[in-house]
Length: 81
Image (cartoon, rainbow, N blue to C red; front, top):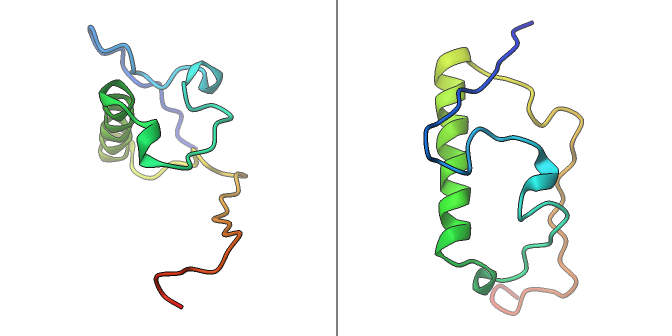
């Protein structure tokens, strides 16, 4: 088993991952693109970049082990039906 400690990145306030509960997205539902401003998009892309670097350094890892993701639709699609 490999352990990983992400590096501290200079002035980037979004990295390393830190405590998930500190995230602006913790416990939030994403319902519309209108929820995102430039700062939130920068945060998402910074975390994605850090995850990319982590995989490049240590290979695969079980960051989401034991987690479940579900896409739920309450109404049929009007675009495809």
